[in-house]
Image (cartoon, rainbow, N blue to C red; front, top):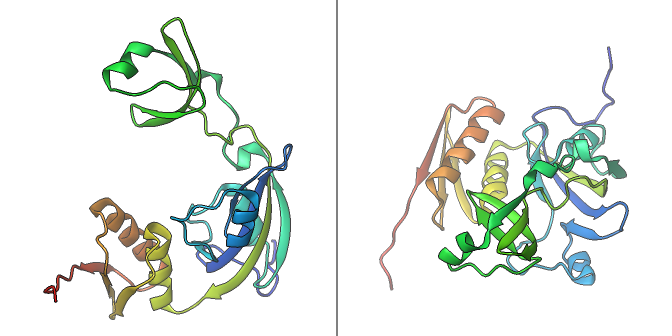
Length: 227
């Protein structure tokens, strides 16, 4: 039997992590929780709120390799890990590179420009080339087949139920200003911004699964008179 060290993560733990991720062979940084790094590397997105990211161990909030690495760490620990494709975004699948008639895109008013991304049958793909009225589209994940490197830090662990609820809401919506009331077996969530129905369902599912004792989740929509 393998015993875990004191302080190591376990399935269902809530933690805040910081990380910077890059492609191993090129050194290209493609994701980070740190605003200064994002600006330095030219990947800053003003729509993203940078800072520690809340995740639940074994809940599918991260790629498998990152999840596995975090489980072997302690709060406050920093670690550099290499993650192979099979534990990241999978190997490349040539069957996901398809030829599509250019006319199909023209009918929808879509410009076919090599390097741009398109949606086809709810799949996002990158246009590789346009030749003879046919468009070659790659539906593989952009990082498929890549070995990735992560610099990770576990910032802190979340123990309080109310904060756990807020962390789940934040993960799915990015919202921070959320009212939470914890009852004996239920939780009531009040957000100042509208949350889509399918997102509410995902939030409720995670709360019920990972927060002990919670059996019911209620969302309260509040409408106030304009001043």
